[in-house]
Image (cartoon, rainbow, N blue to C red; front, side, top):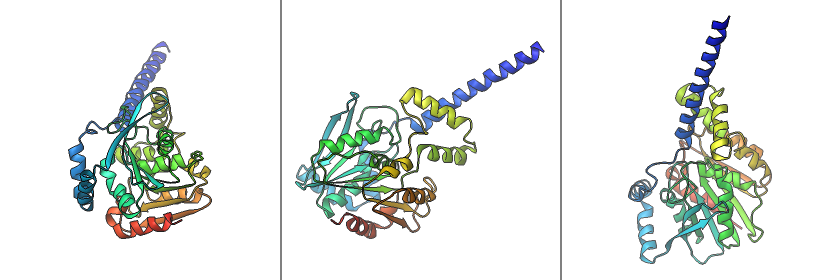
Length: 306
């Protein structure tokens, strides 16, 4: 009997150690910062290769010294970097990049807002990305509060928040918060964001490793709470969208498997009030503009029309 109890105890200890090790691995795998985050040259090369129309536009910005850097210190004391373009307009776009990515690769969106619409543009490095402080990704949840600070920092009459992938989720998470009273017109554009961090990670855990949610999702979420101050369960775009009272445009590729297309239908259904949905044809993750340039701009113009 004593040997059996000892064996069970040893087995439980081994299981706990394996689970803890797996949780640390999953947390670092999914939330660890990109070690290449400061490789500016590579980011520009990828931008120009995918969106050649940005080459001349970037040259023009540099010639007139219109592209600037700024840093905002958040209430918690960490510093966040952003690029910005000021046109003198009373309309501003806040563009939010994706997971483990950098703002430069999303300058194609900045070009649309500056060139096509004449907007000011702010493109922050999200916490744990690029030149901002932090070494862990927060999947948009705590980032929504940082983005709120950016909307307060640049005084404007009209604000559009436009995010792609994790940036889309951040956009939706922000949409459930009360926006600054000085901004008269606020609109949100989600391009292929996920319903929740739990849904996204659970889906990837099954797809990449063939593992169920229990127990690793639960233990890793708890570890995230202890180490990072938030949990997978609370980081829900879906719940934030339910609280959103601002107009929102949802964009999603019909062939997206990284953030499955079915997610956008749940998000669209949860959103009350003014909303639009555009499912782009023959498009995988985060390539709606790349595959449908003219219609993408047309849809934005229609949605942002006063």
